[in-house]
Amino acid sequence: MAEEPGLADVVAEDLGEDEDDSGGETEEEMMTRIRQNLLMRGLKPKPTECRPPLLSSMDLAGVATYIRSGRCQNIIVMCGAGISVSAGIPDFRSPGTGLYDNLQKYDLPSPQSIFELSYFRERPDAFYRLAKELWPDNYAPTPTHHFIKLLHTKGLLKRCFSQNIDSLESAAGVPKDLVVAAHGNFDGCTCIENGDRVPLEEMRRAVQVGKDGEGGWLALAQKYGGLVKPDIVFFGEQLPERFFMLMQHDFPQCDLLIVMGTSLKVHPFASLTSRVADDVPRLLINREVVGGSDPMLEALGLQTPGAFDFSDTNYRDACYLGDCDAAVRELAQLLGWLPELEAAVSRPLTAVQPTLSALCSPQVVPAPINLPAMPSTMQQAAAPPSPQNAPTSVTHPSCSTAAADGFTMLDGKASPA
Image (tube, rainbow, N blue to C red; front, side):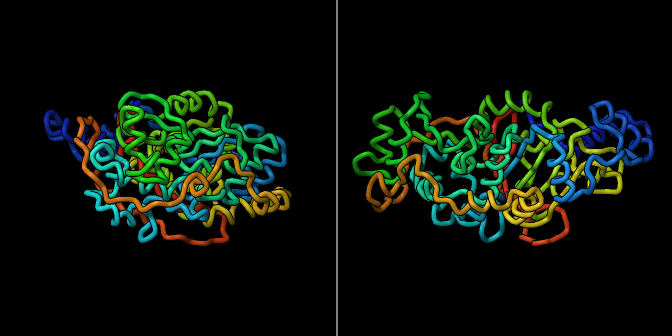
C-alpha cells in the first residue's frame, strides 16, 4: 500500500506536462485542466448546498443525543498520542515537551534516528534506554482510555484504531481483539535478524538491566541470534497486516466515528476518516482543527476525500476544541455515564504483569556502543516539522490535538511524517 501523492505533487506533474505541450495555454485553461485531472483521480466537487443534518447540533450534545437514540451500535474510535499525554507520555512534536525535542541526551544524528533500524543495529543502547522510559508498565490509563472501555461496556465499540504504542487501551480493560495498534506496541518482541519470537518477560528484563549483566540486552542478542526489539513499527517497516484487514472490514459497518488526539498527518491512518459512509456522523476531539480540506482543492472547487467540514455545508461533523480528558468527561456527563467513568478512573488497576522494577533492581546503563552496521533499505529520515499545536482550552465544541504522530507511509512502510 503506497502513500497517495499529495496535491502539490499532482499539480507539479500537470504543470510539467504543460511546459511540454500546453501550446500557450492560459492560466484559466490550465486550472481547468488540473481540476479535470483531479476529478479523474476520484476527487469530488465541493458541495454547494447543505444536506439535512445528521446530528441535532454539531457538538458533544448533538453526539450524545445521537448515541442515546440507539441509532449507533458500531462506534469506531481513532486515537493518537494526545489521549496519552495526561498519563505522562510525551507526544512526538509538541515544542519543548515532545519526544523529538527531548532526545539530546542520546546524542542522535537526528531525532527520529532512534526509531530507525539501521541506527538501532549500530547503536542499540540508545533505543533500549528510551524503551526503559517508555515501557507501558510505567504509566496508567487516562480518563480517555477509560471512556473507550466504557463504550465497550455499553456494547457500542466496534473497534479502536490506535496510533499509540503504549497499550493503555488494553490496560484500561478494552479487549485486545477490539484494539488495532497501527504502529505496533510492546505486547510482543522479535529478533530482527531471524524473526524469532522472544518471551516478553526476557525482553522486559533486558531493557531494565541494560547492555551488560545477566539477562541484559547484549546477552539476549547472543541467545537469540540477533538484537531483539518490541513489536513497534520502526521507519521502513511494514504496518501490521491486521491493520489493513480490519480497516477494510470495520469501516463499512461504522455508524459513528470518534477521532481523538491525533494530528491526522500520518497515512494510511489519516485516510481512515474517508472510509466511513457519507451518512455517518463524525466527532473530532482535538486541541486544534485537523483533517480539513486542502486549500488548493478548495480554490479549485474540490473537496479532500474524508476531510472534516466545519463550514456552512457541514451536515455531520461535530468538533470539540480542548483537552481530550475534559471532552470525554463532558460527553459522559451528557450520556449519564459520568459516575461510571469516574469510578473506573479512580479504581486501582489490577496488575496483569510484573513491573520492570519488580523484575530486577535498577542498574546504571552504559554509554552507547558501536556494532557493525548492516545493510538497510530504509529511507533516511528528515527532521520533523514543528506543528502549531499549543494547548488551548475552549468551551465551544471543537477539537484538541495534543497528538503528534511520528510516522507516514511509503509503499506500506513507516517513514517519518
